[in-house]
Length: 61
Image (tube, rainbow, N blue to C red; front, side):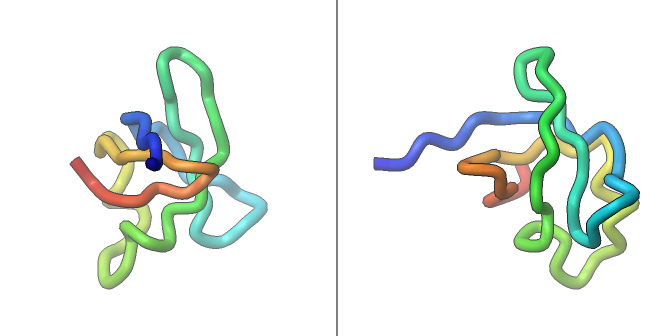
């Protein structure tokens, strides 16, 4: 069983491609957004909610 925790994308990371800062329950985490940014500009993800599992955004909500 996997646990996906919802988080809000608040900014893009400067140091690594396809990485963003996500606010999960008040804690900011660096998350890989390559799976949800496929075919769209990564900057359009800011403000979106995603399901986070083990450092990866698995889907957009």
